[in-house]
Amino acid sequence: MKYIALLRGVMPTGKNKVMMADLNEVVSKAGYDNVTTYIQSGNIIFDSDKSEEEISSDIHETIKNDLGPELPVIVKTVDQLQMIADHNPYKEEKYRNSVFYIATSMSQIDTEKQGEIQALSKEGEYITFTEEAIYYYLSNGMNNAKINNNFLEKKLGITLTTRNQNTIEKIIGRVKTN
Image (cartoon, rainbow, N blue to C red; front, side):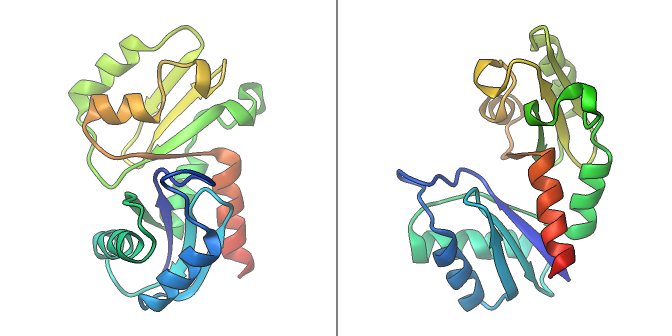
């Protein structure tokens, strides 16, 4: 089955620096097939017969042991990622594609905390929770927002990784062309 692993916290420099060529190599050596990476933010496309949970744990340990950084790994099938992109309530042109984000997790989200988070958002910040993702629109961008990946992780007590709609669509497009 075709999967996409979305790494949390990959940086082009600093303590979580991971070169995509190195990532491609270690994931391939770990036994995954047809491995390719997409942009420097840590998106890995590959084939495997393992479960999402097994893959997440295995790739996490592989990166930690072979490259150093301890990065959370969230794994989705292509169909799951396509559903996340299709169900984004903020993908209309009026929301300007560059300022909304999709956070994905492998954990269930506590429904009691959803209302609390929505109440804390500032004007121009909108957040929608679904079973597959958390969608948020930030009219003033991520740097000026109260709602962001770190805030959501802390409030929900889970690990998230965030991509914008454009990136998710490009990852899916990359899968379909390979």
